[in-house]
Structure formats: C-alpha cells, structure tokens
Length: 142
Image: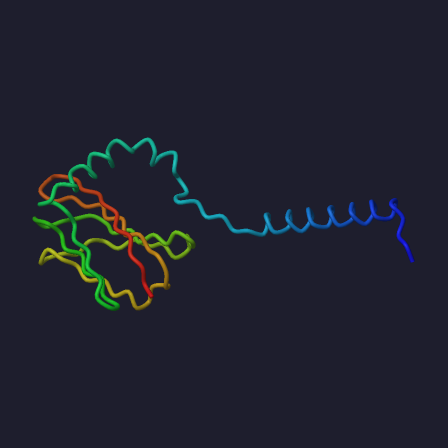
C-alpha cells in the first residue's frame, strides 16, 4: 500500500505539532531558581560590595577555606570578625542558608555532613577592625 503525498504532509504536520507541544510542556515544567530574589536592591549596593571585595583581596586579609572530609574550616585573617556566611547551592535555591560568624579563635568549623552533595559557593561577608570584607569560595562535596 502506497501513501500519497497529501497524507505524508498531514503526518508530518501532526508530528511537528506533537513535537512542539512536547517541547512547550517541558519548558513550562522546568524549575528556574534566581540567584537572589531581590537582585535589583543588591545591584544598587554593588559599589559597597566591590569595596569589600577589594579589601579582602590583599594577601594579609585573605580568607582561608580548607576542606577535610566533612569539615569545612574557615580561617579569618585578624581581629574578631562579625558577619554572616551564606552557603549558596547553584542548582537548588531551597538549600541555601546563612550562618552567623562565631569565631573566637580566628577560625570557624562547619560540619558539612548534612549538606547536599555537589557544588556549593560560600559567600562570606564580615567586618573586622571597622573594615568590611566580602569574598566567595567555591567547593564541592562528594
């Protein structure tokens, strides 16, 4: 049995419409997480953050992050720092959380055994000796 050219066009059209419908469904079902919810306000404060980043780039003021198994040790350069550590999971915003800096000895240890596996970004924003600092450190948990 031979299919005529009219039926071939109909089959091609139905296949195209079905494929496009499937792609539209997949696109609307995809979850998209923004880096931050209030990015306009954060963009207005970019100059302040940039100054903090410049302060943290000097070698004597650089934050040191070391990973040993399930422990993440964060060593602050000097003084008694105050601020926050923001743990950012790029592929799932529901796992993001903040930890207040509690460093009496110049370092803080975070147990990562309850963290989800994969890539994380530590965003440290702290103040020591009346100077603000900001740095980011990327690490992977396996």
